[in-house]
Amino acid sequence: MPITDWPESERPREKLIARGASALSDAELLAIFLRTGYAGKTAVDLARELLKEFGGLRPMLSADRQRFCAMPGLGPAKYAQLQAVLEMARRHLGETLRRGDALNNADDTRQFLVSRLRDYPYEVFACLYLDNRHRVIEFVELFRGTINGASVHPREVVRAALTHNAAAVILCHNHPSGIAEPSQSDHHLTRKLKEALELIDVRVLDHIVVGDGESVSFAERGWL
Figure 1 (tube, helix red, strand yellow):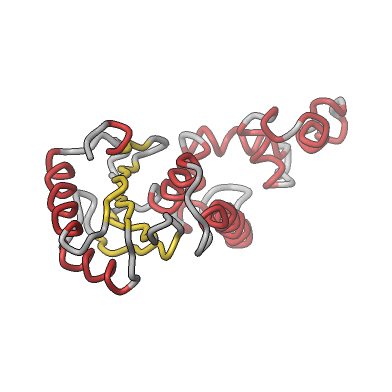
Figure 2 (cartoon, rainbow, N blue to C red):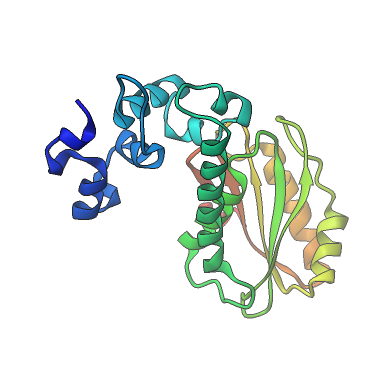
């Protein structure tokens, strides 16, 4: 039965308008993005199949172009459309941390950092540089590595802090394994960076470790 023949309260688009996006399941949200199915399958049927094949919404959204386009009902146009939607979402979060804005909301800061780093298949180390009033100066990805780690050089972190005339910094890196719990190496690196930055009067406000759907704050754990 086509979706147009469903009761209005069960149609994904009408349901979203009436009750808000949070009321929809992953399959219903995806069906709105897909818009149509194919012969014998509605957009909702197709969405359910895709979620089952990929193992969930998140793995589907982060799939590479080749795998995404190989699935029935998808293709290059849908892939481009999806990447545009994801980038708009990242930029929407980024606008909460615009240059010159003070960091007043720890949750917004964390969401921004998670959105920037969690989908990388390799480790990335980045810094959010701030002025003496904790206003954003620049977010900088400094080091990229393998799935197991990235080599972080304190002198480069210090050099970037001097270049941006920063007074404070939030360190951040991802764990491609998906497990956000910091390692002993993460603790050791944080101590080294804190000591190096203290020499130029730059304070380390936090170190956020990003996993798959979770993150750990050194500041919240009392490790700084």
